[in-house]
Image (cartoon, rainbow, N blue to C red; front, side, top):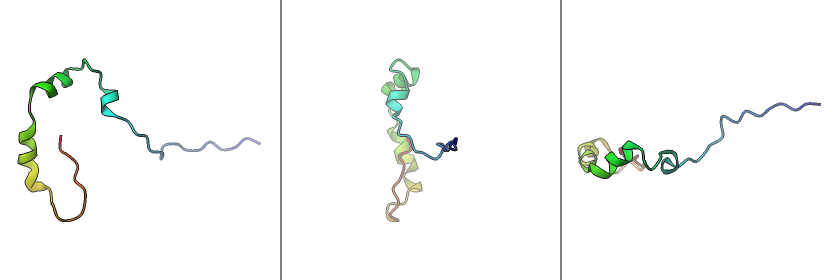
Length: 59
């Protein structure tokens, strides 16, 4: 008897962006050249520091 195929779409896969983006990609050059620290300060008012939920870094 043939068994049913299991749906694998609900399984989690851990992938590193470092592994996905090639070292010579132009976005890596931009990241190394431009400081995006100002974005964190501009977005700080939109993150609550006392409700117990972890924030997701905006960059």
